[in-house]
Each structure stands twice: as structure tokens, then as C-alpha cells.
Image (cartoon, rainbow, N blue to C red; front, side, top):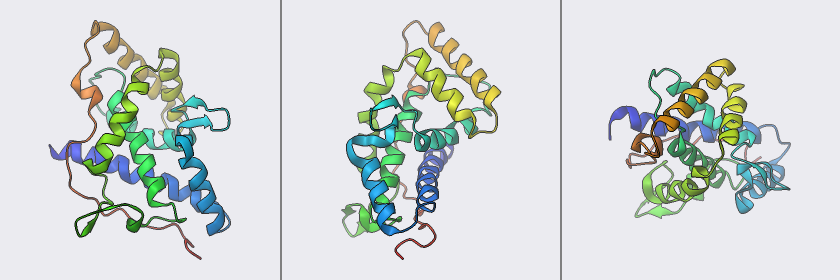
Amino acid sequence: MCRGQRNWRSDIGKRALQVVTDHLNTLPDIAARRKWVADMSHNVAFIYRDPKTQTGSYRSDIFLRTFAAHLRLVLKSDVSYGHPIGAASLVAAAVERALTLCRDGGPSAEALPRRGKKSAHGFVPVPWADRAANYLKPIKSLSLQKWREIFELSGQFVNSRRNTIDLFEASTDACESSDGYVDPRSVLVISDDEPENDIAGPSGAGH
């Protein structure tokens, strides 16, 4: 895997953890943090804008804030390969991982299973490639309107709403001109197992 793709995956993993810990820092105590993580993790509630009614899939605040990390990178490119199905599935897995790491109220490598003598805390294929792949099918079925909303809502976290709309239109044009062909770049998930040491707790976690 090339260094650029590895850094892209690493950036998304780190961003997801930062988004989750930023929210944890707004909560009053460890009990509230644990409850929020448990609520968001239950039935993948973190995916929905309104978890109670399970509506607004892939438009929750924590998903959009993490997805914005991907948009910041691709906005630098002049080429679009269609709607970022693979990136969205990777973002969903990254948020799931971040919540898993924070299940005790703050990031901890001990929250994840071990691979031999090492904790599998890095955003690596085992188990996150399979988790990301599980999100692919529903993401592939997202309507054009939902993709537009994802791009527009993410724009507020990119500081370039106009550019994200332009990017949406370019990705849509790429889809329409492909005549059903799905470029493998648009469904890229994970293909490297280099761990990232991105464990850093929220201020006051555990106290």
C-alpha cells in the first residue's frame, strides 16, 4: 500500500478518535461519558442523525465531522472517481473503533482485543476491514439526495461549503458517466496493517 493511502486511512482513524474525545470532554463526568458511548454504540446509533427514530443515516454529527477529514484531502484533487462509498464505509468503521476505544469513558488500548501480545488498537485490517466492509452495502444504496446532504452537511466542518457542493456534483457526474462501472478507487477500504499510536484520553477521563 502506498504511503499516501496509509496516511489517508490513518488520518481518518485519528480524526474519528478526536471527534469522539472532543464530545466526551463536553460531558460532566465519567458516568455520563460511558453512557453516551454505550448509547451511541448500541445498534450503531452513531450512524443516525436522530438515533431515537433511526433516521438520517450517515448524517450524524460524529460521522460528518470525521467524513470531513476525507473531504479535506480530496478537495485538493482535480479528479473525481464517483461518490466516496469506500471512504464513507471507512469513516463508519473508524467511528465505531473510536467508540470501542472509549467505552470506559476515554481512549484505552485495553478496550480492544489483543493480537498475540499486542493490543489491536491501531486502525488496522483485523478487525476493522471486515467492519468497514459491512457498511458498504447500505452505503451503496444511498440515494443521490442523501449523498448531497452528506456533502453539504460535512461542508460546515471543512470551512468550504461551496467547494463540497462542487465536489458532490463532480462525483455525481463521474457516477453518471461511468455507465454502471464502479471504480475500485471509490470503494477502497483498508489494506495495510501498520498500527497508529493515536491513543490519547480526554481531559479528566477516568476522574
